[in-house]
Image (cartoon, rainbow, N blue to C red; front, side):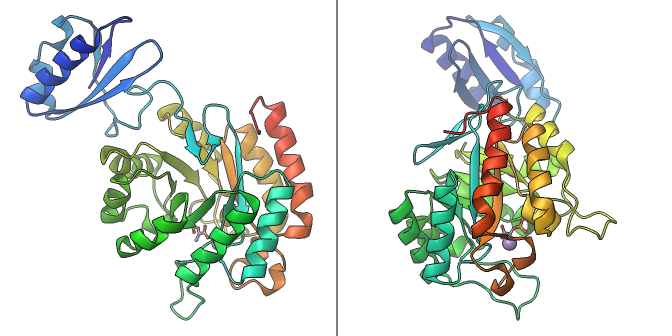
Length: 338
Ligand code: PEP
Ligand code: MN
């Protein structure tokens, strides 16, 4: 349930509610907005309904949350969450274009991609050093060597890094370099990994699982936020359907639905959603129109020779034109793209 405090409720009144909730064996998560403080209460439903919280000083009302996710819900936190990634903001009307190669391959490839992203007005650099590949025989990524290449590209361009973490055992090394931890679609329900990143103070980009419902995706985000890390960016990257013309099916309803249900920013990955370079621009525009807070897109200096996902990668030479179209629409739609 959610306890909504009156405007002007004192810190002491908030503390009294928290103490009462904790006495009952439940946990309280306080969210202080500009005008109103909201307390998310998690615990046994029956015990909680018996608590006379509504009668306590400073309490405006108590609302039962029927959905299984609480901390990530709009009821708990009505205002959009805005995440600050080294000064680049995402959420609450601030739009972020994240781009780069699928995999980090060489220093030149990453640097060339980063320069193209920067020159095009992109906000962050993506690139995988630990790659989740369907085949164990496919390129698995460069590991720490790749992370160093990303860091060198950040040093030159100032673009924060987004890179995937697959295994909790790699957290130390990945955190040493990255600004945003990407949890891939295949790991969306790796609950141990979710709990681990939930303990950190680092933004997490959480991809929707290949066959996950919106509710399962939000429950995965709940794991991270429950651990204390509220900096979660949701990412819709296409889901499995019967359709074979595209690699996956981009679920644009999920973007609008997740934004209604949750305060977390939602970005779209049109590259993995379609698997086709020629569909990346139209679906990027559609994602912006549907309310996405950002895009994460693959670009490569030479897609024909990419070690992964070449067919869906925009050549860096064409990235400026792509970004101009996307950012123009984002501005027109009232997003800030600074
Ligand atoms: C990726 O971003 O390169 C990736 C592997 O994405 P996903 O987890 O969405 O398949
Ligand atoms: Mn990829």
